[in-house]
Length: 294
View 1 (cartoon, rainbow, N blue to C red):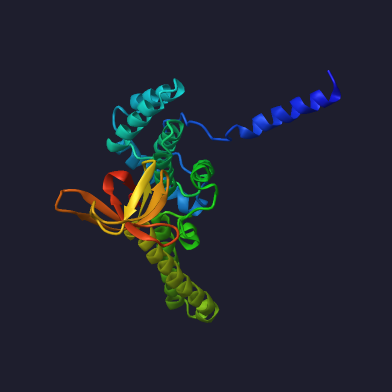
View 2: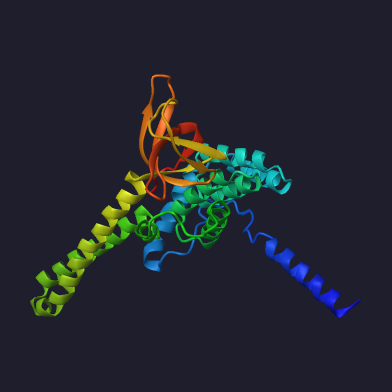
């Protein structure tokens, strides 16, 4: 075999390896508490104990068998059936990053990119620092848009690094620290001068943390978003079939939801705004509305 032939085959193998998707596959752990990157120790200790208690109390009795069934269907290549089982588990109350992550994987393997992105974003809300969730979400976004850049504004992405509960914990912690410092100043006259600067800093921390908490509430709960779940969606100027076509969106397009309306023909419409700021109306069955979570 000639040297040039060997080089050609090597290049072909390299190209084939580059074409393989570096996709993080299924999670098989049954733990509903599996999440992203760890919390700081001071914030996590009490939260973990409380979450364990609540999760064990709320966990459906058939969660383990249903989860194993969905995983088996996934491994057998029955991705749509697996996604249906994961979805039923979520409807029964088994809401966790692991279930949403596996649901996203199943929809991706089934070729439903929009539903996959919606599932990954739900998982991201529950575990905002989970590297596997972020990786797969970026991977599927690149399949849709050709870029890994998130359509979500940078400020909203930064706020989403913590859940609303975590922002609440930070705000409460700052407030209690301020109260403790003020109490020490009242008890000990000698400590008043020494703690004056610390009290000022704690007061600033309270104001800032509560500002972030309010912004996070606005972003994660009050602001609504959605993901297109059909191959090509026609976005119209108004919520009527007779309205002129404004533009089109593809499966997996992420939009901001502005309004919802039901017309006289008993059709539900959703007003959306895309990443470029264009506003229009599409039919509600063509989009998944993402739930705001704490």
